[in-house]
Amino acid sequence: MNAKRRELKINITITILIVIATYLDIKNNFLITGADSFFHIERVYEIREAFKAHHFPSWVNFITFHHIGQAINGMYPDISLWPLVYITNILNPVHQIIVIISGMCLRNFNNEIQLGTAIILIFLFPIVFAIKELIYSKKIEPILVIKLSLLCTIIIYSHLMSIFVLYLIVGIFILARLIYHRSIYPIINILLSSTLLALTSLPILFRYFTISSSKIQSVYSKGNVTAINFTDIFTSASWNSRGALSLVSIILISIVLTNLEKSNLSKLMPYIYGEILILILGTNLAPWSILQNLPLLDSIQDTGWRFLIFSSAIPFILLLINFSAKTSEKILHILFVISICTSIGIYWDFHQSAQKNLAFLDKSTDQPLSINDWVKLKSSGINSENISRDIVPDYAPAQINSEVYNNGSTLSDDLQEIILHHFIIIDGEKISPSLNYKYNQLTFQTKKSIDVASTVTLPIYNYKTLKYNITLNGDKTTYSMSNLGFIELHNVKKLKTVSVSYSYPKLYVYLVYLSGIFILTLISLLLHLLQKHKIRNID
Image 1 (spheres, rainbow, N blue to C red):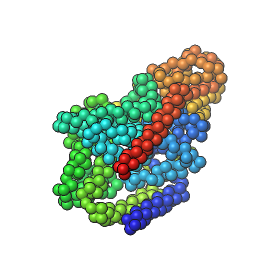
Image 2: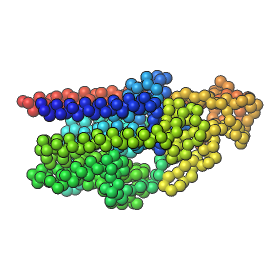
Image 3: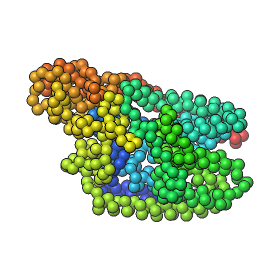
Image 4: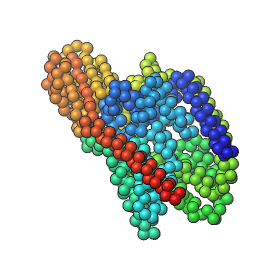
């Protein structure tokens, strides 16, 4: 009873703090935004507007990212965000984001918003337990297969690269088990689980391969993986570390290693092996100068971001295995109190600094932002034309003109100018039209009618495998792709209004519903098997 009361007190404390923090943020009515936060906030805004129109989110972004129809939402998994956005759509855009992120972990209080990663972290402990069970499986285990497929569905619905990282870690362990123990059941179980995962992930896979077939630009810093120095994950550690170990992890690991119970060693070793492998892959101990040349691994970008997030659960598990429940509880209570105090301090300092030093960004702002600027973002500033951080070549048509720098790339200056000002190019001359947009359509209107034009290039990306509906003065017309990857019209007469609309294939809608049926079926089957297993154990 005492343990339950203490657990209740902790839950109440956390809930109260989250409610207070959320209330203060909503009262402020802005988001402290910078770096890739713009990127992910705009993705949510695009989902929001599609739901308001009673449609699934579009694959191309017409409302955000400067209305160029870039396939950001199509290539970045977002289905795990759909229910969160749907149930908060009654709020204004900024309040909606605040409510969605209010349960995020400490590491995001003063870092950029990474919603996909945050959702994965919610399920981190079940993921770690399921992987351990998979690697050491000695028979075909239906419960494990279904459980793992559902957990991996959450990952692939949230962040595509994380599923590759997870499979790399699992694959190494499964190979080791096969070589040293001749164990084939982990392979069978992962294949069965992956088959179910393919069925639940059909919408993501379908849109990913459809858009990729258009020949598109690669992700940022492809082939140039940044590997954090091994020593830096300790020397750069803080309570809310992002690309390094947190102080909590270091403290817990130190406590366990200095008080190791030999009787628990067999239970501890699987998790210790896991932590060691993650630390190797997450730092320069792994030969990333070679690995970055391999398919999929060339898109890792930063090893600290990709691998070390999976390490944070293991130290807690080691503590719980190595010590008695009473001792573990005392240690965790101390760390809990410190974490609460630290989070309050970080939250307060971060917001006080923002209040004093950051400017507002809303629809009235006329000052362009550099890619490194942080602002106090208002709802009307989410799709501001002054944001430059969201002008990126990622997943744009391969024909666009990009310039490589350091370990990444950016769009050429002339292309950025076209995008920022929404220029229509008529026979080589740039024209600034008026622009109206909604989630699936863009409409350009010139100030005066253009009698005749050989070529009209619209500032909208053209993906070869996507079908657009284009009307000229209300009449449907044909189109092609310009040498810069934009939509281009030919032999145009009486140009006044041009509308471009896009709707995903009907098959996609069916796949969304079909995958939903698969997920519900798997959940029902899992609950049935668990109940059956429980009854069998009682008997």
